[in-house]
Image (cartoon, rainbow, N blue to C red; front, side, top):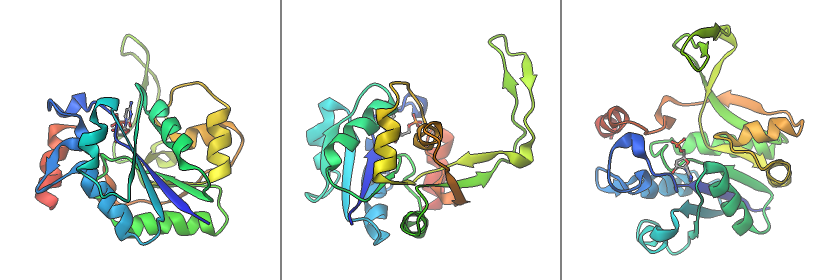
Length: 216
Ligand code: C5P
């Protein structure tokens, strides 16, 4: 069946500090959006791509991707954007969700995620060990807990799902989340981790953009 990649690119990217939304910022000669879409095609593991952008940038986005990519309008929260993309997918057996902001993700990582879902996992996410100790804090900044670092992982994309499982997860909630796999956990499905890649880091801050430029 069809493997469809959703590319949420409707964030404002305020932390990057540019006037234009983050996905439209250039890294070398190409935008983050163009690079992310090119990486998905290069994996050889994806049949269709749907990108989700701010409603006022539908036409602009079409200049950043080929005519073979479907462009739809996103929403205020990432969850809204993914939901809009999911509604545009139609028939699919596997759905990937891949942040436009992870523009340097190796195509081989994308192919590994798809292979794991094909092998029967209903949800697959790339992860890396956490290098810093992580604290939980309250609203005043006082520490309320220190989870054991050895059991923590930082989550990347693409996240891969059996299409029906991801649809059920989104149908089951109206909550906002920054993580699709988290919604799948809530409906009782097991989420499987695979080893991620440092190059799949999310370009969020000016520091990240400098790093990405250096890595080009
Ligand atoms: O804000 P954050 O960096 O976590 O966003 C991750 C990805 O989700 C980005 O590619 C961003 O464009 C996308 N996003 C979206 N719609 C939103 C917010 C974020 O598509 N409303």
